[in-house]
Amino acid sequence: MITMGLDEEYLAYLRSIPVDTYIKILENCSSDVYVTDKDGKIVYVNPNSIRHYGMEPKAMIGQDSEAIRKGKWTPTGLEKCITEKRTVFAEQTYLLIGKSVSTVLTPIFDDAGNIELVVAIANEQPDSYDVSFRKGDAQKKLRASANTVERSRKSEDGDDEIVGQSYIFCKILLTIRKVSESDVPILLTGESGVGKTLVAEYVHRTSLRAGKPFLAINCATIPENLLESELFGYAPHAFTGASTKGKVGLVEMADGGTLFLDEIGEMAPGLQAKLLDVLENKRFIPVGGNEMKHVDIRIVAATNADLEQLVAEKKFRSDLYWRINTINITIPALRDRREDILPLTAYFLKKYNQKYGKSVEFSPKATAILIAYDWPGNIRQLKNLIERTVLLAASGPVHPKDLPEFMTEGIAMVEETYKESYDYILESVGKHLIRESYKKHKNMKKVAEDLDISHSKAFRLVSEYCKDLMKK
Image (cartoon, rainbow, N blue to C red):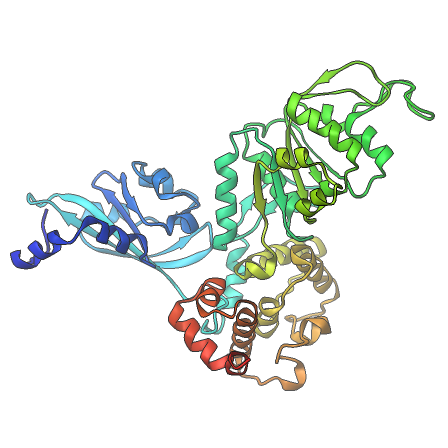
């Protein structure tokens, strides 16, 4: 292998360094390192692949680069690098997270002058919500993010897409893909409004049952006596007012597919026992019936309650809890995945602009407030706000004065204190994010992880913005 003119003494030194040292360097490199052989087969990728490509490194090794690339980044620079046998510079986009990257592809030659490897090093362009992002980035991000979503099954309210680019959310999707081919029950937890129903649909769509029924029911909205008949159906004349033909329940209707039980913590103990029998023995008896029926279904359950606490209080069966908790996926609150606020805003803006025949946009200052706000109602609240804003907006972009007052409270951006400087608005947002994160964690390392910035930057910003908090 050609070694770029390195002298023998230095090469000897490099070879003396343990392989583990090189592994640590590559595995912890903040840049995207992507290596192929002369035929385009992937030889190595570092852990950034989870976020950037939605795949773990070991799943990519040995795969054809072009086959992996489709739907994950564009355009390719590998073919040009191999064909022209020279270093290639490319501006690319990671489609999974909607980020632009600057990539350098460098060919490595063997002693005969033939390409042996191609090393691609990619670095993301400035982040979209960090303190230092440039004027216009947010608006560009909003427009671009509308095209960086992953399709999911269409739900009743018309939202048919999983939208997200944050590392934490992409990792959840990766976990779902890992368990998609199994039939184990899945428990989705998280605050109200984080999108558990949509994730449940995504579980079904990526499973081997995708062509079969997906049925859902909210256990908290139906009285106990009606919930049993809705789930398990009933025999003819089972009770007063019952149909003479009986009724097929959701459990039977979902045979071969997936049944989603939202707010399962509200299910009565009697029904919990019946559901446990379905999970363990794939059988049930309809209300008022005497004939055992058998079904093959996958159960996905969801709750925003503390089921362990309910078990301790004897309000939820422990055996059912451990049965449905085989795979537990916690959907993070929107305030914990702020990188997804802009893509979600772009998606809902596009949706409601099309629905109401408008072309509403958020001004940079209003966008800054959307990013800084904590969204206690999560995605549901954001969705409702976007629809309300589109409905009420006149002509021109949406400004902070057009947003609800509660969104600007506590943030130094209310209209009376505005400065026209865009940088001032960005600094105010950054200051708010840093202070809130430090209040929560009281640790600079965790602030860096929370806001996805370097430790040195976290140290500098905390020192600048949180002096009063550090004294407490």
